[in-house]
Structures are given as C-alpha cells and as structure tokens.
Length: 112
Image (cartoon, rainbow, N blue to C red; front, side, top):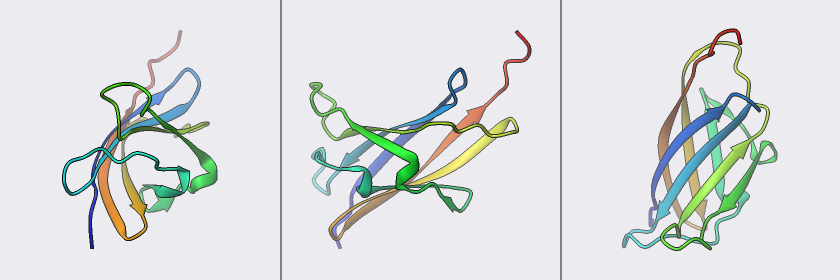
C-alpha cells in the first residue's frame, strides 16, 4: 500500500476559539499532494474523532511554494482547562494513507 508523508502544526486562536492545523501532504516520491478535500482528513483528539462536519479545509495550492499544504480549521474549540493537547491527523485518498501527531498548547492569558 502506498503512503503519504504528513506533517502538521496546530494552534488555538483564543480570541475566537478556532483550532487550526497547518498540514503538509507529500506522496512517496516527495511530490506535493493537491486536490484533497474535507473527506480526505480525519482529526482525533484523545481518542475522539472530531468528524468532518466540525471542520473545514482550505487548500493553499494557489500560493507558489505551498502546493500540498492545507489548513484544517475547527470553530468553537474551547477546552475548559489549560494544557497540551495531542491530536492525530490521518490523511487518506483511495488506498494511500498517512498520519502524524500534532500538539496544541492552550494557555489562558489571565484577566484583561
């Protein structure tokens, strides 16, 4: 079975409670994989599947040098506690799959 190489970084936008992953997907030859849709991505947090309805995907292929890069965005992600959260990101298309782990640190900035 062929495999993708997947790299990801995550961040939590605390002012509007968005969770964003920057994801890079490459094929076995190292070429960027374009044309992926929401149905090609699955994101798990601590064993719970977020599901495709909770996220939207933005492909960045129109920007030179960012082919094979995607933003996965989940609105209204508001964990009740501070800490480091582990996420598993799985990318699949036909019989080709790849996965990676990404961590997001949520720190409350305190009163304003």
